[in-house]
Length: 136
Ligand code: FES
Image (cartoon, rainbow, N blue to C red):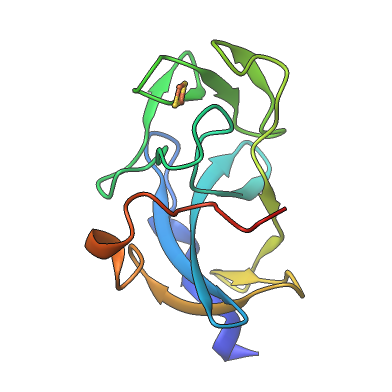
């Protein structure tokens, strides 16, 4: 369904990330899209080390040797598995969000979320301490 179309596939490049916001019930959650060799992947936009720290701060995440970097304490994450390979949360994983690339677009296919909009959460400035907090 077009409601789930996030962005044109060509907008997702290998050297940056695309930030978008989904709804989980009444809550907004940020998600980042990354380009893989054979498609795309999406991860919830918070660090497993400190859940109030975003990987993509709004202008694309940083990369080092093809891995995502959390700039707060330097943790690195594999783009295709979300696995933290180095840093204070080594061994942890980013939380996956299901997406699919087809017909020139990238679509949200995760039943737990509804696509809301491209870009950061609408209340971002008011909730800097709460991202990723879901009580789990
Ligand atoms: S908050 Fe990300 S590495 Fe510490």
